[in-house]
Amino acid sequence: MEVSAMPTFFHAVVICLMLAIPCSVRADEAQSLQTIGTMGKGQRVLKGEQEAVLYEYTGAGCLTHFWFGGNFDGVENTRIRYYVDGEETPSIDMNLYMGHGVGFNNNDAPWATKHIGKIGKTNGFYNNYRIPFGKSIRVTAQRAADAADSPRMWWIIRGVENLRVMLGGVTLPETARLKLIRLENHEVAPMKEFVLCNVKGNGALYQVTIAAKATKGGARFNYLEACMRAYMGGSEQPVMLSSGLEDYFLGTYYFDTGKYHADIAGLTHIDAEKGEFSAYRFHDQDPVFFRNGLRLTCRNGETQHGTIDGPPHSKPPTARYTTYVWLYQW
Image (cartoon, rainbow, N blue to C red; front, side, top):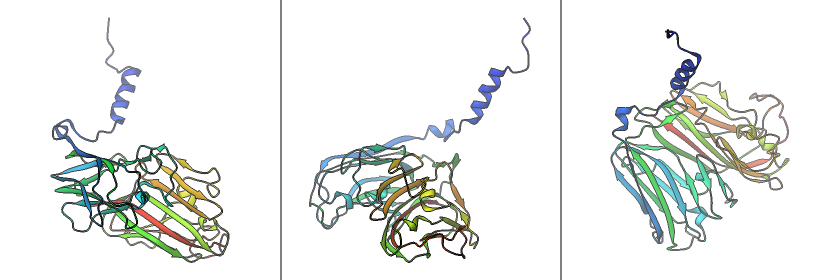
C-alpha cells in the first residue's frame, strides 16, 4: 500500500493546533522551576500599628496566588503590601477590598473568576496576580486604626521560582515589575479630565479598578458618560479605550443589568439612588502596551462624540473617584 507524502487533513489540523498552543517556558527552562510559599492559620499577627510580615523569600521568581481569611471588625480596611527586590516603599500597597476589585466594602459573596474572587461574607478574598521579583519579595499586612486588635487571621501565599510573566501571549522582559498606582477620594468637577496614572518608560496596562460616587449636582449617573483615554509616548492624541465609563467595564446603559463577575471585567457594587459603583477591568487578553510613557485619563462627563471640545452629552454631577491602576513596567 502506497503512503502519500502529502499530510492528511487530520495531520494538518494537529500541526495547526500544535503551532497555536502558547508555551510559557521551554523544556530546559522548566528544569529551574519550583513552587514556593507559605500559610498562616488562625494567627494573631495584626497587633497595634505593627506591619506584620506574612511571607519573605530571597531569590528570583514570581508570586502567583494570594488568599486571605479573617472575620473581624475592620477587616475591609486591612492593608496588604508587597516589597519587591528590597525596596523601602512597596510597589504594591493595597486596601484588601479595592485590591480585589471591590469598592464601598461590598460584601456580596460568593463570586469567583480566574483572577480574583470573594468566597466568604467578609473575607475569603483571593487573587492570582503575577508579581515577579529578581532578588527578593516581602509581603506584609497591617490592620486599620479602627479595626479589632490582634484578630485571628488566615492566609496562603504561593509562587514559583524563576517563573516568567506572560501577558496576552507575550513573555515579558525579565525586568518587568508589577506596580500599583492609586488615586483616592479625588473629587472631579463636571466635564473635567483627570489622570489615573502618569508613568515613564515601557510597559503594559494590566488592570484597572474604579470606585466612584456622585457628590453634588446633576443626574446621579451622568458622570458615566466618560471615555477612558491612553496617551502614549508623550503624544497629545490618545488611544480611546472606551466609548463610555460603563462601556470600559463592558457594561451598557449605566449598568442596566446589575452586578456581574467575569474574568475580563466585573461590576462589584452599584447603588443607582446614590450614584455609586465599583468595577474592575483586566487587560491580560487585550494588553495595552506602551513605549516611553503612559498617561491614563478619564473624564467626568463627555461631549456628544467624545471629543475634547464640544457640547456636553448630558449634565454630569461632581463625582468622587478612587482608582487602582495595575501595570507592568520595564
